[in-house]
Image 1 (spheres, rainbow, N blue to C red):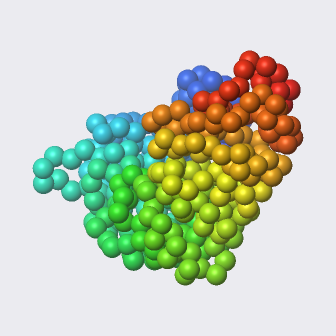
Image 2: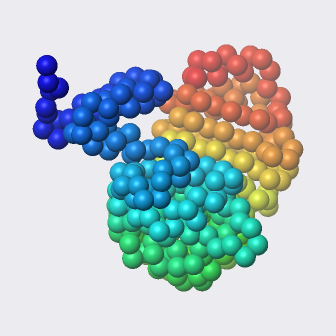
Length: 359
């Protein structure tokens, strides 16, 4: 009895079903068995099997066959420093189907160069780089080769280009929806770069981990007529004086993570204009007294579902807050479901009754 012959498109659908119909190990074994049936099944099976494989598998393939399998990969994850040598092994390959590239922190020997541009192909949508080395021409290659970039996450700058070149990349990627700049960007967020991100009409999420100075925020916002027009999520570290500027510029943001550097201004009260918030997390880096005005600002956020208030150094303080005022406060948040509140106050266990009725 001959094996069933299916059109290539239908055979691919069958292989996809096999790949997603079982636990990972079982699915991989089923695909490997299918590959042994005949040439057509082998083509379809390897196409699915090699879309996302541990990179050591590609490195173990003989050099003359490596490109054949690289052609099929849609995801590539190099997830630890010990795998840094694979960049050199793969430097002459092309990855024409690659959509996601995750490059963990790179560890090089003295005098070695890092090769990453081979991953920067026209179909690339998500690029994540955790730093450790600079790659020559990486920025220019991303800009010229990857018109469909949707997510860019850079723990550190990826090459030695100036901030103006990064601004050119970010503003030139019209499909870009998410930008994540890590701690390695400390001192590199200029007013012009901040303005470029704030003014990007397609961006949905911005995450900048290092402290952004108030002068950078003020100067950047002055350069943009309609900042954060499409932004749904912001994750920033800033001074307390900057919170009011941000709230005024981004009143329609739905998710906000702020790390507050100081307590000179009432950051919580400064958020009064952000009435569209659904998810709010504030982390203070200084000893802070939460005010009644700050809680009144929260009461206006009728769509708020998640609220977290915490300090990394000392407990927050709100000694004016008693059971009655807490019950009144929580009653003003009809949609709250997740509440983390690390605050010194006069609350007793009876306050849990008010909270339990909401969360």
